[in-house]
Length: 404
Ligand SMILES: Cc1cc2nc3c(=O)[nH]c(=O)nc-3n(C[C@H](O)[C@H](O)[C@H](O)COP(=O)(O)O)c2cc1C
Image 1 (cartoon, rainbow, N blue to C red):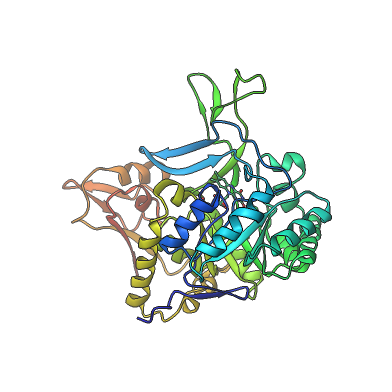
Image 2 (cartoon, rainbow, N blue to C red):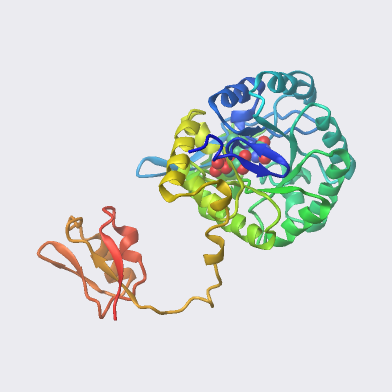
């Protein structure tokens, strides 16, 4: 396999591999970014800066667990803690000097509804040696209260205006990072393109309330009110493996509407296989936050080797032959036929006799599964082929077969 099979062209830039750190705590300063760069990441988007440094509440991260395992996270954190000048005078020059030459550094900026702020920030970032600029119109918490972030990103007119304003300030590739907190992302993507975006990043976090501590009736993550004693919280941004279906939806919709605009896919990418899912729905690069926060920068090694081995096994010569490969198979509901008829079949060797599928099918399905000799068995004439039994089976003991 040639060495550069993972390289990809994106908005005029060449990434040595598609894996980028998204704008988040792992890109909070030069030290973090340089460590990632040296471990082989293709690039990084710095933690977003705005005109004023952020002061964050504590605590600010909450978790969603399933059987003890974290599957999603929410945060009420805002933007960079350090002033713009720390980035422009100290950290970005250091990163550009010390990172491998082929490491792509993307500056991330946020301003308000006045276009001048975007132009000024884009101009400033263009003079730092950054390779590209991502504009953040998508942070769902805190920022919207100040008419920033997702407040802008939910309004096509504002998205077009601020994209155009940032465009005015830079000749660098311009990425617009979109929010999933909209009913229809296409008018927003159209506005970004009309305003001069070279690429789209999607998605930022999903607005959420992660949970309630039921012992104290306190929303999570627990932070403190202004008086510093009363425990309170606020709506945050949800991310991690649990948001992958939402990210895949938006990326695929944007890719279908704008086949010529490169997309940086984000949302729940945790390993090489979830990365491939994003490539297959049209993403050209892949941004990762939660998986790095949970498992560290070194996950890049498995991501690269897993993607490479997959490409070898399947005979894919380049990422271009994977990108968008699933898109033609995403159609409308109306375009799906009821035929051919498919029914469930329990693979006897894998069935443990736990009865989960029997219970689910009895109460949530078509009463089509019975126990016979301690093994679940499907009655073909009752089975509707809905797929519920496979969802509740922890042993991968269900397959679907065509019947005549
Ligand atoms: C703690 C935290 C801080 C974040 N800060 C930013 C930010 O400053 N700018 C930004 O564009 N996105 C920010 N994000 C969003 C991530 O870049 C990313 O879009 C989101 O987490 C989805 O990716 P993931 O599922 O891989 O985490 C932040 C996410 C987290 C968890």
